[in-house]
Length: 131
Image (tube, rainbow, N blue to C red; front, side):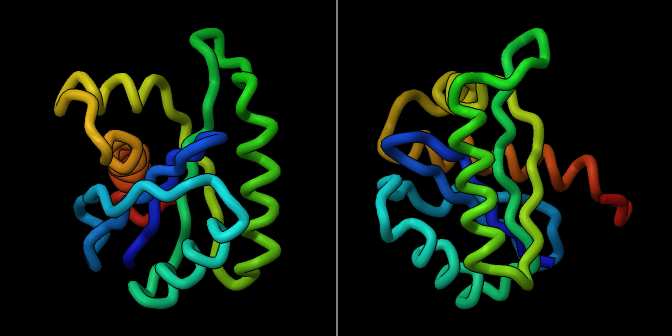
């Protein structure tokens, strides 16, 4: 069970990938949020034989959707249309980019590290086969 994690942003998108057993998540890449993004994610899923995609669900501390959540939902819908046989899940996330910076400092893979934290959270919550 290999999964792809996504930390969606309006300028950059962090990408992470899990190992084949779904035990851990690793930062993979940071890609621009441009018109090639969907095809790059699709190609990655095919290449790595990913069985699902997990996108960070951005909410504020009160649990309300952040301003970017509308864009995340549009992106999720576009992914579902592009990759109809691959499930796309949302995983609640709070300050994953800040946490990634705290752990590793700010660098060119910070958004990918944030995606790995999102994917790690999803894997931990679903480690017993629950969705």
